[in-house]
Amino acid sequence: QVQLVESGGGLVQAGGSLRLSCAASGSIFSINTIGWYRQAPGKQRELVAAITSGGTTNYADSVKGRFTMSRDNAKNTWYLQMNNLKPEDTAVYSCNLKHYDRTWYFYWGQGTHVTVSS
Figure 1 (cartoon, rainbow, N blue to C red):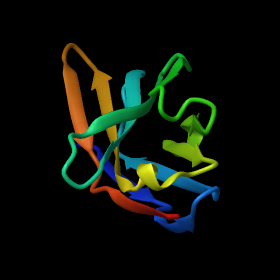
Figure 2: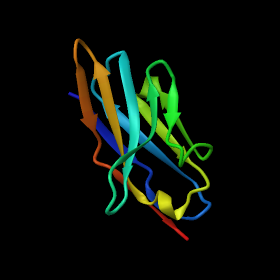
Figure 3: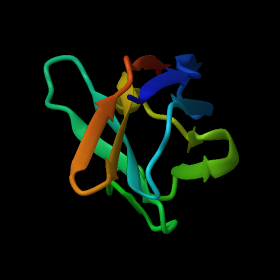
Figure 4: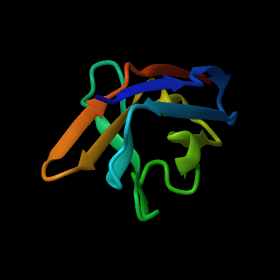
């Protein structure tokens, strides 16, 4: 069983930065992908960024050039560096792990709030 705990959310002014962390406890299989998702009030959850165990990253168009995802495998921790934040980035951000061992397993964190004021 894996548990994910996000941290780093908060209130920031437009143009500011935050770094979110997602720490995993438990064993992570070698084939895995971590994704950061967000859900704003009244909107559907969307994928913001993802990184595979091979190091490949992809980003939503709305955050390209502003957000950077990274991982520290030794700590089982993943990060989302968010720069030049905009009010439309306001949402609950959650990390998701999927990893593979004969089948896929999926886990979610509890989420962390990010509020960007104009």
